Length: 89
Image 1 (cartoon, rainbow, N blue to C red):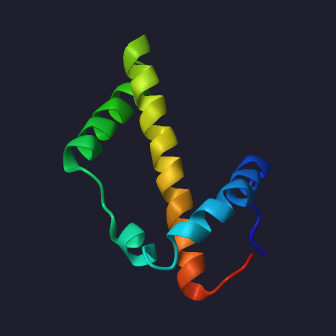
Image 2: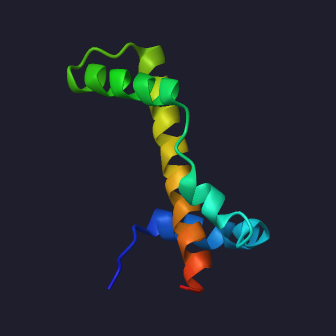
C-alpha cells in the first residue's frame, strides 16, 4: 500500500484535471526530461553549502525554489507514469 503525505496527495488530486489535458500524449516526453545540466550543478553546489551550514539567505531562497521545482517535476512524472499505466489512483 502506497501512503502519500496529505499535502502531496491533495496537490495530486487538485492538479489531476490539468494533467489530463497533457497526458497521455506528452507522458513519455515528461518521463524522459532530464533538465539543464547547469541547474543540476548549481543545485549540487547549494546542497553542499546547505549541508555545511554556509548558505546565504539569498542562496537558501534559491535552493528552496529548486526544491519546489524538483517536487513539481516529480509529481508530473508520477502523473505521467499513471497515464501510461492507465492508473486512476
